Length: 136
Image (cartoon, rainbow, N blue to C red; front, side, top):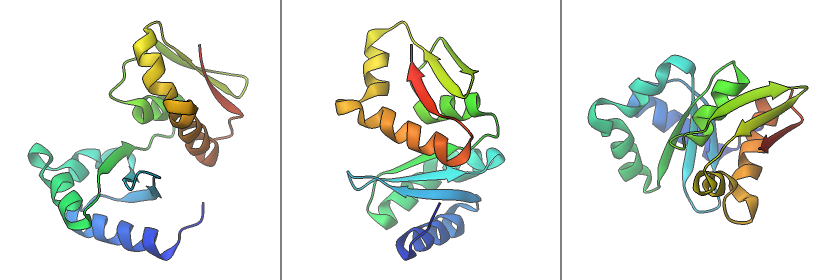
């Protein structure tokens, strides 16, 4: 994980405004920012009635998404795909399998041209010893 000057500035601003500890900041192609916050910091990052995240979004003039980090890979993947509800997430031989019955939710997780699944794969590979994330 390499941080550039923009990411460092975004992390500093986010931490100053919310008081939450940030693990990583990811700039997305659509201009939005994803902040990966430490396990216990998600409520602090959101603030009362989402006031912190709304204020950060207004100041940065970008759409902000907060993802809670977890040391458990299955819980981390569940946080990544939130608010989509899946049947089960399991780790089998360095492959994370997401079990989904609903085709609409499966489509949301895949994304257009599998873009969302690629982002999920990249993030999970960055922080865990995992080969791949699959949707079953």
